[in-house]
Image (cartoon, rainbow, N blue to C red; front, side, top):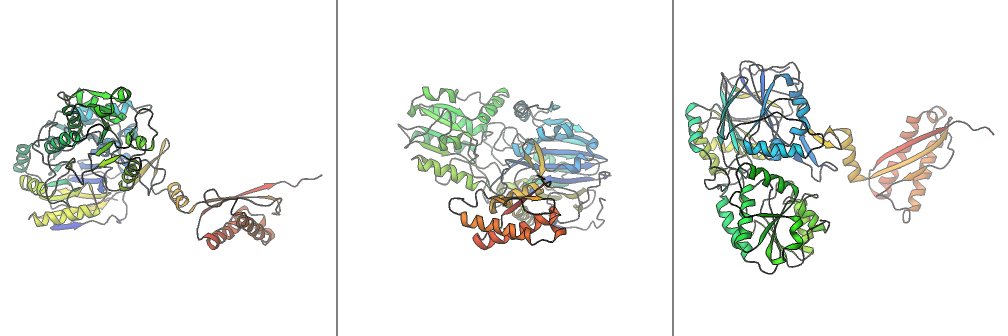
Length: 583
């Protein structure tokens, strides 16, 4: 059962351990209080999914995905496990989106058939979501309700107001949540940029007004808490890109950035035009975002954008390719260009690729792989480390301090960060003189009001992985076994027996990726012989039991591999029994 902590004297930083016992009673209903429950995005970057509870109703803020890495073999997409809220989905009054990044809305197509609640979004976020749904096979018909930037609306017992912030995408909005018991401002992703180039600047007056009306809790982005200075402005990036592209002649120039960064896309198009080049979009997501931007009135002043079908008609020194793949995604345009597998676009020795982005933690190896392939082909690589061609979309410490001053919240709850980011922001809150912070990882139930904020329990949480056409838990046996196979290999051994347990032929062993029959024939023969000996030494009772056969064979094969090559592979034993054959 969900339980209350009746100690309301909590002050200072409260660290919540996610190892609390799990209470996912489907009958748990929020009472006369304002609750906050992160199911994703607290203790990790990405997969944002947040719940607010009040008077028997739940409100969801964001519903995003994350991406697999080298620690999740075979997994491209991950998302939070929504089991807790799905168990009482009839109490879910609505889903509010802060902005149109995949880690904030990308899980909607996977969960919609179970959620079935209205989705509230700004016009740009709605346009992007519609295009994403259209690209999905058998896409669900989502009830999308557009709310203007800065708009006010009600969902169940929650009175809501969008508050405009700047980010690396247009129309990023904080969500001001007011109830009869208390209030919270959920920032989503944000930074301070008063010259954002695409969309309005941060609405500082609205933030100050929220603070004057009272904010009991600030649920706040932690991504850049390790950085002292402000994130910087897109205006400065634009000027530098124009200058940088102008420094190259007689070569093809390519640039890669996040497809959702409309200001950066416009800056690259302008950099191309200013230097007598044509901007060519390479990658489906770039087309999807640019179309959504144009539909919502953005990119209106940008020079025309060509498509990859025009690549062959534009001279090498007159092209600026704008490519997807800044994070080294293997299926993205730049990765395919780097491997020579793109059907229409190529780069040659002497050409240049500008990485107008930062590397998201966890993507270092994939980005390095793409850059190494380009370098091996003689392509020059330019990154943010040697040119000012990227600014973050997240707040540094100076930005956070200003937000605290405008809002003067009763408590700060860091989210959107790994554990080290959450704890660092909690420490920074104390440095800034605020009274309290709560570090809550996924699954923690935090009562925000009435009274002092603090943890009052936990609910089930976790991660799901897209596995073909279904979703499975990331900690499932299937994925645990796959990881073991990836690191240690897989061995198959088939034994054919009569009903009494006598071998009818030699066992058959296969170890693809572990042993080479041409070079390891002696070892394979020895392993087969040890399996046969193990079966021969079983008692009559054991020889009639398939489980005993498998266990005996698995033991000697495991021992043989460990002794011979020092590995502990996953071993699959197949027992085939044939009826006695009478002649």
